[in-house]
Structure formats: structure tokens, C-alpha cells
Length: 91
Image 1: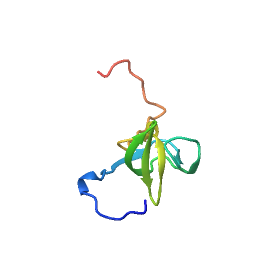
Image 2 (image 1 turned 180 degrees about the vertical axis):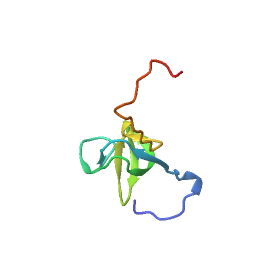
Image 3 (image 1 turned 120 degrees about the vertical axis):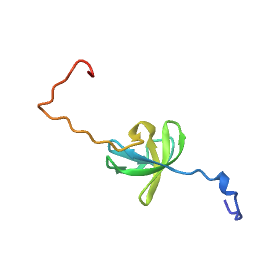
């Protein structure tokens, strides 16, 4: 902005760690279709603000916006075996 100075540390937003659960485009803004690259599934990202259904994130050395529904709080990989039975109730 052309200005320099100090800001109280309480004004900074602490990022939250999330993971992509599918390959996700890293958009250049909260709106529009322009993107820098695609991030692979399972990628760890630092999430900051949300706007227009997208979150501002930092993934490695890149930053941009990812659709909110492409992120999850935990990275959980589960395997279902071909021979598993599908029961009608939990008990």
C-alpha cells in the first residue's frame, strides 16, 4: 500500500491446518476462474479467510483460493476390502 508501520499482533489471523480431499485448483482470487496450479489430494494447506465459498490458503510456497468443500480438517484414509460385508445396522 506504500505505507509501513506496526500492527497489533491480535489483528493477525492464525491459520488453520486442513487437507485437500481431492485434487483442487488453486485460484488466484475468491471469485473468477483463473488459477495458478492444481494441488493434489491429501495436500496439507494453511487456511486463512473464507469468501464466496472459497478459502484463502497457503500450500507450500504457493498461495491462492480453494473451494471450501474441497478441504477437510483431518486427513483420513480408509480402506474397504472387496470382501467386506455391508450390514444394515451398526450392531
